[in-house]
Length: 222
Image 1 (spheres, rainbow, N blue to C red):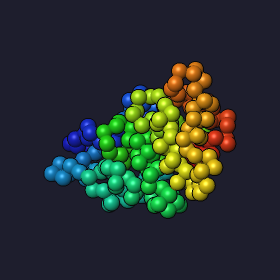
Image 2: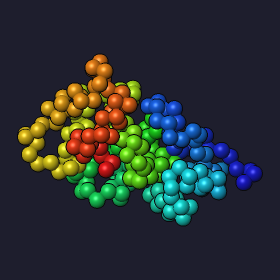
Image 3: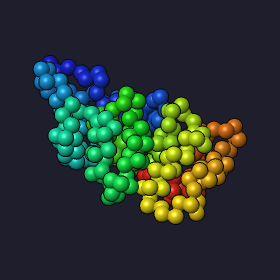
Image 4: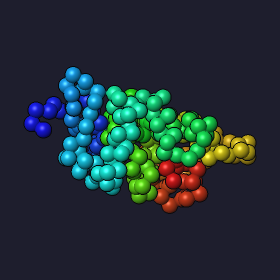
């Protein structure tokens, strides 16, 4: 495609040394403009397909199906928080009432470049890793859900509201038996190995890798 123009603002799905230090991918995906007069319409080159297939484990046919669905529903090629919530419901069996609050936190994990939108590459890679990735990769994404200010550390004040959303997602009814604020306090003691009042991603992943009881409530990507 010799005369095509690179899409510099499109789909930095590569999880590189991002603002939140996820490092699964080393270079961004660049998609191709189909019509320069309608720059919101995009297509995937063979190179894009090969790269996405390598990073997600999806076949080219699966990627193209997702691509068609994504751009049919979102012609500008990106999801804001509201559109993400609607689209993400297609991937989960939970009711909107259970999923909506947690969706806002999952959006933060998928929004790799932190620009307030989830582009196609970010969506596809986030979906692939959070649903089919190994445990460490899924916990890596889970950490981003809890890192409300995206500074690379968790505090008890950040953990508690996300746990509330997880309680709703899991359909926990007797909240008074173990309130989220008490859970957050107990979890913080477990996670904060260095006892400095904040939790690193390594501390978060290290503990939850070995403790499935806490992990079953904390991790939205089971």
